[in-house]
Amino acid sequence: MLDAALKALSQILSPPMRSILWKSVGLALVLIVAAAAALQRLLSWLAGSGGLWAETMVGSDYHTLINILTWIVSIAAGLGVVVGAVFLMPAITSLVASVFVDDVADIVERENYPAEKPGKALPIGLAVTEGSKTALLTVLVYLIALPFVLLAGAGFIVFFIATAWLLGREYFELAAMRFRTPEEAKLLRKQNGATVFTAGLFIAAFVSIPIVNLATPLFGMAFMVHMHKRLSGPRPELLEPVRPTRLPTA
Image (tube, rainbow, N blue to C red; front, side):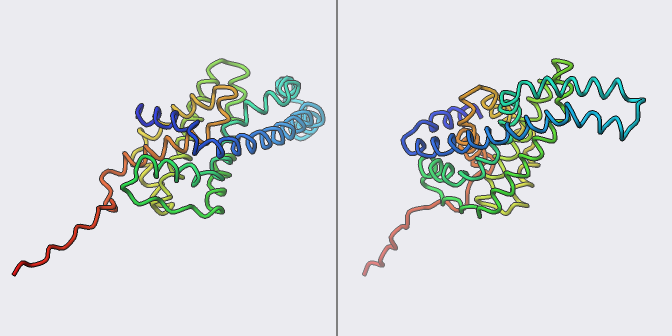
């Protein structure tokens, strides 16, 4: 696994990957700014009108609890884009990865596994759908964990574990679906759940590094291409050279 991670790291800045890197970074930045601005507006509303609306709906008995939640949301809204960038980065990388999955996988398969048949490109609709589902699930899990982060340091551990599980699952299934049906890819992931989760810890560590994490789609995809090859075992579709038929001698 460490060898696969090191190979993925070495390939991020390789000449074939550079154009993909700049495109993925550009797309990630656009999505981060847009999502962070939307999050800041939502938090600002929750800190103001949202608190009054909630108290009207549930009654004055929950006034203290609502005030505490409003205070927490006000702090988050004040931090604005910074909170959004940190909070939404794993979700954004899931979306970006779904766009460039085949570009990255093609390079890794061609350079490291030239004797095997390359995977089939995923339909863009399928790839983006899978990436969107992971992004939405990531946001949901983070919203649940957010109060624990603000009130107790243990929440960061929850964040890290959730990120490892979500991103490990996402990148592995994208890599596997180039060779398998979505159902088969999910089954293989479940059969190797512990290994995929451990691999996800590498991606979670990578995405937690500011600035560097913009390259997460490339690292995560390249890493899981290697992991899928290792977990698949001997491949029956190895491209063996055609041996000339021996002509009978007289």
